[in-house]
Image (cartoon, rainbow, N blue to C red; front, side, top):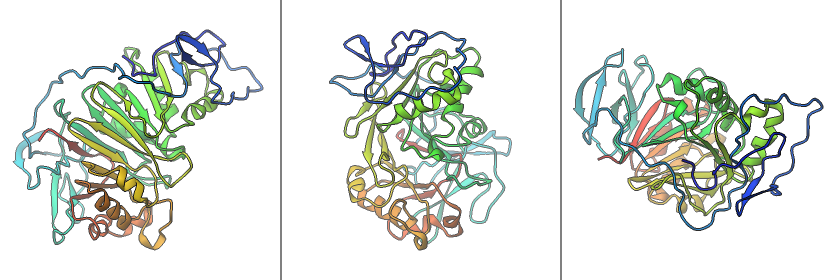
Length: 402
């Protein structure tokens, strides 16, 4: 089923994607027509069922999204963790010192031991703890339906890195499989970490810098040509106003499959201050932030908690107010204080944001190389006294289920 605003409509060959109004198709006046190429594009071999490419102007009422179904697999006790051997097999359950942190961390292949980090574990700096760390080992599988899971798929930037790919974060809850941003390298990281990328239901963009959306066409291409059996479930692409125009502008270069991949696809602009229902229980919220004109922070709100992702942003007291009470604040941490600028955060400023927002815990992401020469979690801990983690690609965090 498709959330409100992504309902299907028949797209005839050669017709420009428009929007629905009162059950009939009208031209999308909000978005300029994409210039034609000098050579006609080859006709896509699939059907012409393009459900919707339009801006989102929600009316009252809730969307009828897919109902979560109970998933199979192990259910983990609150505050428990699993140790794994290098092959990934669980060995024993242990009690953690801080059950509420529940950073069950890395879902990829085991990494070599690093200074200050247990083999197979994420070192989570707890501010004010005298430099002590909480070790969280890797958990396989997904949690119960009352759990929202975050996996930091890409914690890097546009700067090439052997250990970090560009911005991408996996959020799952029941049947919902959401990507917050979709930067370069995301698809291969998803496969590396064993995440079911072919089940993605939504992609949400925070802004239009290519390190936050560059893998999106590749994702659509992979869903079209490499899923067996062929995909029939809809894919919904959301973002700040302009995301419809962005994807339509890419289509002449990539080909007709970007807008008509053979399965339903909805591309919608989400307005600030209008919660967008992802299913019957989960809403997406956006808030403008100081980075680029279209940049927004994103929040995924469910009964068990609220995940706030800053996207790229500079310091903002208004953002702190909007993020108040976040169960998990996923904050960019681009630069060290010596290189601070108004459109990015430093570890100290991320700590300030978490403190002002009274967040329950802080996870740092989006590291340029200069900031990694220091200890970002410790620097943020000088300003925020809650649990802090400097995320790596593949680290896993859980909201709810305790």
